[in-house]
Image (cartoon, rainbow, N blue to C red; front, top):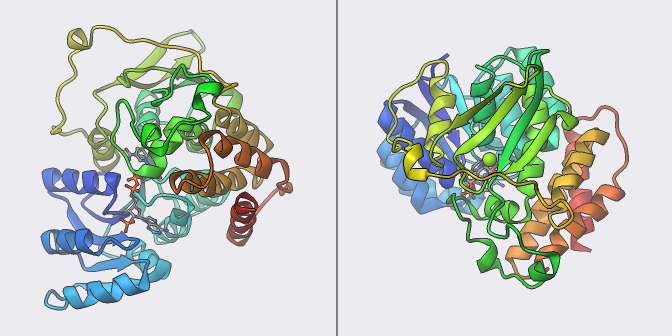
Length: 380
Ligand code: NDP
Ligand code: MG
């Protein structure tokens, strides 16, 4: 079902702003906007898109915004409950979730329970609570359309259908980030500034660091397991420095189908909103002859340890993925704050993985409890 009206959660971030660009281009009506505390940006967005409701998680920022928008008739909400209210708005048919981190889980569940189509950029939602999300989506008959470029590629290669019996494997591509081919020794003293220099994509700070540690690829492996109902061992990760092949699928007859395009998130964002249709895009055309060469390499699993930690976590199941995700959120933040070194991130995530208890099934409250446990362990 093509989107007509939507709520954008995390509208002030990198994906949020690009989603608003797509809305401008496609003429979608924006019914709600949310952010954490970016008052200036959300005020500007609210004045342009005239949504019914906006929400800021931070109470102080929300009360400031309420004053600023008092001449508009736009309802200003606060707290995570305000975000959830925006996710359930009756007038929106789709919720695009571009919140960063597992804070996006509760609003995703709210949107599913309100029967909204979900365009999901917030991969941590599936990593932290994949079982809950997929069960609820099934129960409420809701579609989850991937915004993440690799998952959009896989979705397009599968032609929107769930993985079928003849699918042999998913080939998940990775840029390799700014530290491709570096040794652990060379990574010991890298700075935040070095890690924030992504070669191909301009993204928010958290995911840029996740790309440098390659935790991002581990999170994406888990995301793919949930979205496409495949086993972790059916996903191969391949480094592809140019970020032109966004991922591929291989069938039993060894035929490989890939999706290609320039690295610009507006393509997958737009497709999640227009599926099953396609419309013109402001993104430049891909010229293969201009690109000239596409390269592929095996990842260095010994140096970029986060990939296998994530693979082990999803293989074990339960709350292991939630625990490693939360440990990473905390360690990633502490690295950005200059409190720990680059290689400490993987060490901390591994430590939390090792002391996570096994659960067969879990509730939202269990996820929140393991989140607290993981963050406290990393801070200790
Ligand atoms: P940004 O950091 O640029 O933006 C994050 C957004 O979430 C902002 O609007 C921010 O508000 C809001 N936010 C932050 N913390 C909270 C919270 N606790 N509760 C509610 N809202 C919050 O992130 P990105 O746009 O880069 O990434 C968003 C998601 O998309 C991530 O899950 C990422 O992995 C995924 N993704 C991103 C890609 C990219 O190219 N950027 C590519 C593929 C996936 P405020 O501005 O007020 O802080
Ligand atoms: Mg991605």
